[in-house]
Length: 265
Image (tube, rainbow, N blue to C red; front, side, top):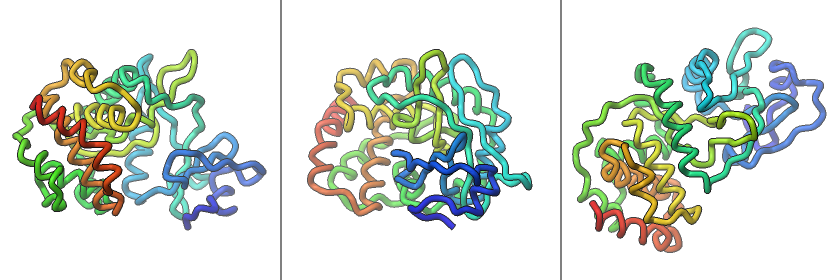
């Protein structure tokens, strides 16, 4: 069972940290992620996705360019218990101003997982983020909204190969002295690898003061970059609609970037 009170005593015992007294709710993970001793525990969000992700990251070879937390099994060998999954704690902190470093780590990660097949849970997912992703790629209708109408009018076919990507990178790359960047909280989608970079850049410009003039340079070498930025904007805005959080303040925040992107596309 998951709750804002954290994992139960039974879950902690299963993952071998039942004797740890201190626990800390972490800022990420929508307030549902906890550090307990050497582990980070989070609601699984679906056992098939959690088990698939754990299996991949348990075997994935780290490099000098990136690392990831390792998943932790229960004493019985399970990846998920009572709706919770566990990961080794990795040191570091996110820095949304280091956009180029985030994109370099993401590129290395995406190259490392490029051979993975499409997991079945992606098409079955029905949360707001999964639905918004399909909307941004013309697979479901977008919400009625003038900004989304403008973006959709600029949709063009994207020929870049699809693969599993991380679709929420900017705040989920941790930096620590002497260590490769750590990629956490993997949100898997089946899209061109460059979309992960485009979403990160949209987030950086909209919420973290990255100048719009940096967009082209940050996307240098990414195939079909302009179109991926259009799709990334549609994805973020559609998500806010589905969460019931699209309002005048957010519209005003996104408007300069939408105008700039559509002027250049």
